Length: 199
Image (tube, rainbow, N blue to C red; front, side, top):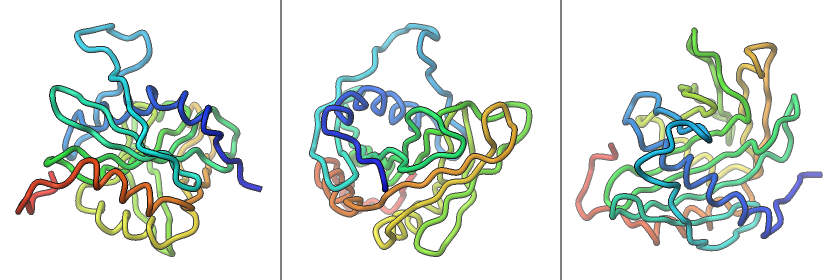
């Protein structure tokens, strides 16, 4: 039976996810630098998110960074092998900028000394993701197809290196409510008019 995040649990995750959404936007087409807790306390604090709503197994929220609005939707893994804390699948929009940034927070750091192979499967299709820190990211050229599959499918499955690079980690995510959550963030962070470039 899939675990469902309570509204309180989802609310507690919002600041964590805002930080991840901020990190995802750190680079276009390259692995972003991850902001680790306690590392270089710096110039800007983690933004304070505002909930947009809960939709099935998904939660949507928004925050402002550098005067620009960022919207994201996320869900927790319904099962993870081996068990890990706070394994998440999320999609991020930046108003008038980058759209449909899909990322997975693995709950452990990927190996630094070699590229990590992470796959994401949904609606019968599979993609290879690139990694940085504890996250795996869909390539910009695959975003449209991945989001379309997440909207069609019932479940997404991610597979990649396990903790400390040993074995394989496998995570399952419910897509119940993804379409409504995606529409909520698309409405809150609309695309720039007549913009064809997603990067």
